[in-house]
Image (cartoon, rainbow, N blue to C red; front, side, top):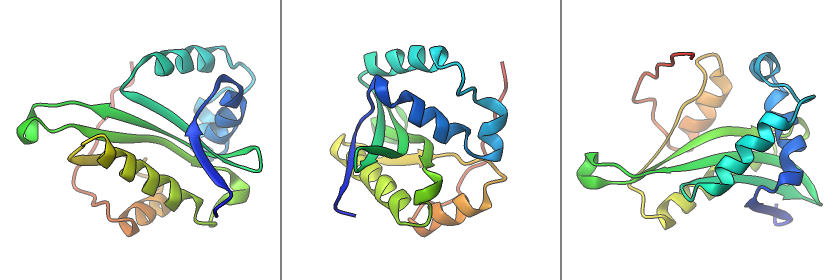
Length: 150
């Protein structure tokens, strides 16, 4: 997969990113690819925040994957910083190709480059295939996550 480029997302990438976010049973319930305005506003907030990286994986000028990497400074663990990996998506035509592994490896390497001591992520409880994928990459299911919709 040497023809793959992982780069910062640009405004022109938003339609492809949103299409991937919406392309599964969970995303189909919460995403609205027909109205990109809220996504473009969110992109601007991300782009203005130096602790956020929204990236895309591009092959042959086509967005085939995305993830968000958030840097979180902290006091615990002796003042360690950590990264949180969010919104990992691989285009349906690329699933099973190893692209997801390359994207997570990129995120872990970038976290090391940023001096982080920990990389964490959450995955919806129903995504059992994703859980196996992350465990295969060395992540451990060490915590129980909670959400409160506002």
